[in-house]
Length: 486
Image (tube, rainbow, N blue to C red; front, side, top):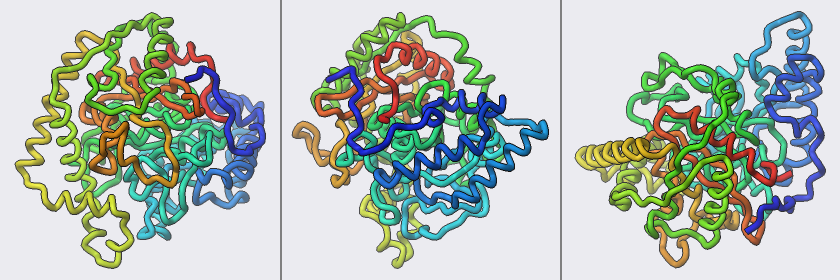
């Protein structure tokens, strides 16, 4: 393992000074008219032209002339003394699972290869209102299934450090675009680790917010599907907070959403003063881990001690296998049922990847008592977490159980000799925060001897999002390398 960030193996030129500025710095610079929106957008479009052909992170890129015309309108608005939102002039590409009005949204599926939505996802609408300039989409696995970003519409996204390795997923395109300075900030979504895993695999930050903080939709079901959430990704924690401030907050068409309490970016002005960490590691050898992951995370915990956070190894008294099966059941009941309309059409079914078909067919075998029992098990885990948070400020786990693997491998079939019985079993470590509705933030922890990145999850109590971000800021200050790959 190493504390030195390796150079990317992609033949990319150095990023410009503009592209290396943080999102917070860029928005301040544009509002103060030290840089125009056109200059900022042009710099990132040039970076995309130079780098994206090597990694395939950004897809459905709009015409450059149209993007620059939008930037010119933003500059003219500012010159007239118009108000500038918190994301004013920032170029952003939206994850290709989210609806973008007038811009192709494929979900990584040939079924939707030519689909152009007539409305935005709620959070996308909010980003537009905050002044963001949407330039395109970021690549995803088909329907977001699996933690390896490839699909038959656009092909694979390659890891930011090594072209032979996976970018992770499902927010793989977003993570790689951030790591190689093609975007200043990015959105993602997370059901079983999709904001956290690709962030770990590309040395950036990915934040799964508390359940309900960011309203989901529009959707045909706004009450049942509760485990998938939208959230921010960034090259530093302040950029995460900047984007979350716009994504978060109650929406009347998302009845399970709730109001946020103040600004997360402003909240980071208050420094974390330390606390207690419960280090769950591999749950007492319950979870197989590729060698080197626990070592990197434990070294990161030692850096946390420099910020007055003290760690204690803990293995909760929980039936972890039963908890995993509850996660699988609840995922099938939402994701599998959501895909059933495509499965029922023979022409569309033949376009579905095997993992999507598996989710549907497993969902069709479920009974109401099984779904109820899984929800009861989830509720029990939530109570366990609340009791842990009476003693600890954070729960910490590795973000993944394997390092980034070859991009041609759809998913790991075994970890240290232990077989994986589903396409997502190897990401079991991500399910615990999801089931608890907890905020969970991936932070970089370093690289193994082969230069492969890894991260760990900082998990806070439900609705304790700001405390997690503050702890991240304390940890970030201890890191001996910058985020990203370029």
